[in-house]
Length: 397
Image (cartoon, rainbow, N blue to C red):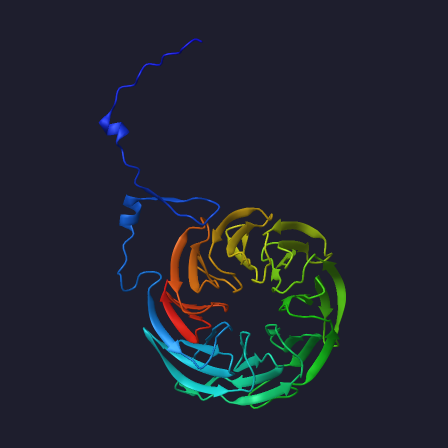
């Protein structure tokens, strides 16, 4: 046997004992490095650092509905909160505290986010009661106590979020889609406000609807994504596509392209041509998707953001290619919100996360005592989110 001898290299204390001062952030498909110098250069007042909680406001029940910003003529900031006991609260935001301006209770459990049209907030309960509540301010810009101005019991279970065109309120129940007039033509004029305009029968509707022009998209328990053409007289099917699992998330209308993106319980995200229903691409998330897909545009590039039941939060480009994935320890069923260069979302590991959109690097993490299923509301550097621990939490971002 022949031996090969290699010359020993000289030992250099300077080179051989060099310490690697690089921190690697786990969670993203793309690993990002920050040197100590970079970390030291990013200073924060510890009282206002991202992820620092500054507020806990207790309500009477679990909160799974998203929080809704309310416009005020005086420029004061408000949010509308709804919970599982039918409690509806208007909160005034005052730096590091809130003031409950008014609250009222409607019969039933409110699981889904209210929507505001003009001076009315529309709310639907799981039991199928649809209510309109006045959201008004006096001449000095002070809020007038809210009151119920219209209600209708559909008598059918509702798991979906409400949708509006500004003139029509669309309610998706377990057995079909119902449309109501929600337009008030002028002061003191209600006209046909609250009148049923049309309905369209579809079984197993749990997904929330999305609208693009005169086309309505909605998924169902029959595993189809349906595209419906709707108008003043009713709706009819343009096309439908069957996946391998039920569709319970809200379809996302692309901002830059002529397509619609939706997640399925079969573990795939599908991208369809909006007009023909042809599949453009599909992405294997490898776990059921309940989370709504959110679109974000940077320059000429569009990205799609969503979570799955394995606790992974994904960022895909417009071609369906994964940019990064961020891992949490619970199912992600919340709708994310984008603010600046960051995306914020809740996980059923009881944490709120903020992630840098370009890199997938963790920006902040905030713990509560419950799941975070609803969409947060953001004002400047403050984020507010409801939790199943019954609290509204305020977090610096």
